[in-house]
Length: 71
Length: 140
Image 1 (cartoon, rainbow over the protein chains, first blue to last red):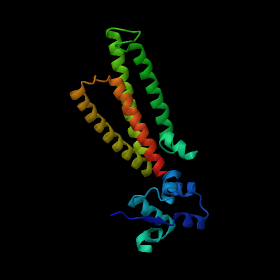
Image 2 (image 1 turned 90 degrees about the vertical axis):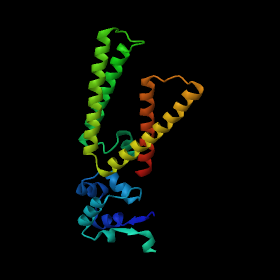
Image 3 (image 1 turned 90 degrees about the horizontal axis):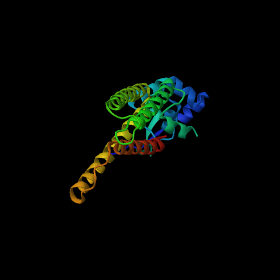
Image 4 (image 1 turned 180 degrees about the horizontal axis):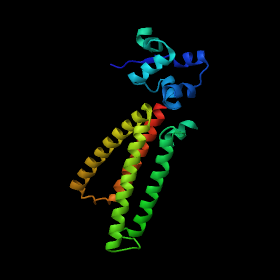
């Protein structure tokens, strides 16, 4: 069973005025990783998802949304 | 442009691990190719026992450098690059096994000639590069 996932990374990043490079630096990943996650081409690992949640001070489910559930 | 740079260098080009891997692997490949050209058993300019020893040592050292740098590069990469490397290696392995089965059958049924090792190595490199380009393009 495949889960289609959407994420609110661009919105959350935009709210804080951060560039992809700034976020990438905080998460210790490449800018390309952030770009791929935002475009939905790559799903982050659970540890990275937790790191993202920590950086944005939100629970994981507030950042990554199951599209089916959202409908 | 940045996407192509990512594909060409296998990661974030500002990372020291990527820069180091690129120049060391390039140098090792160049030296190995140069020595192979001079000492190749069929066409090399240097022949005999010395040629065999030089060739064996060069291939040993360059294989070590390439393997070690690949390991360092993998260890220093972030999770996206690791994921892409694993995926492209898996695809390469499957394609090579498929080709080996086809070629093995061809040899048994139609007596196809055995290819030289250098062609097999070159073929594997091309398959690996193509599978890297496809997986990296799709995921970035």
